[in-house]
Length: 115
Length: 114
Figure 1 (tube, rainbow over the protein chains, first blue to last red):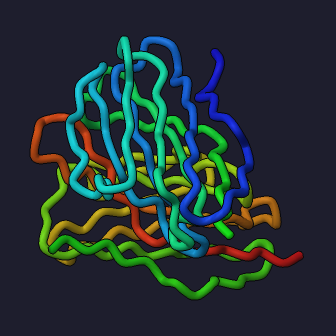
Figure 2: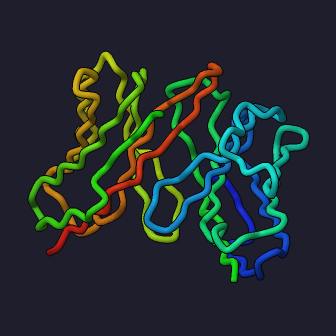
């Protein structure tokens, strides 16, 4: 089966610019996660969707970050305006149905560099 | 607040030895815990899941233990190989909504030398 697809793989932008990342989860997976991973750290959960509804966005900096999952499939994460500290890898993951005790399947991530 | 701690320093071992990685957590009582492997430039890959009522779980050369009293999980790789070199992450479900919410530790980098 196809894995989680993310694009682009790399992105370099200047501070105060905008950027968007795209994620296509595994077909049929109801839960979609966006994580931010700063170099040398573990992934930090930004937002979690169950189908097209937000389950948790407690760590999403809502003044600059936004995310949507229209039709409960693909998702887009946007940063506007970007800051230097947003430089990180943005990982998308999905899991079936969202119930507990299930593994999460990750994409390769988008590496963002803000200069 | 909840905290998940893993050794931030890299673990260097020789091929053939057993690697032991630690995951400690505070202020939470998870029903289960997961371990992932992450290679440079890649997303994490699931390895094992252990439930609170399971003291030990094995998969090939991997073994995970879960001590809910100590609030600690140990991850062992026996007969380690250079190909096992990677960063290993533990993750806990810290959901309050009924939907799984995976929160990751900082990860420990393992280097296995020939």
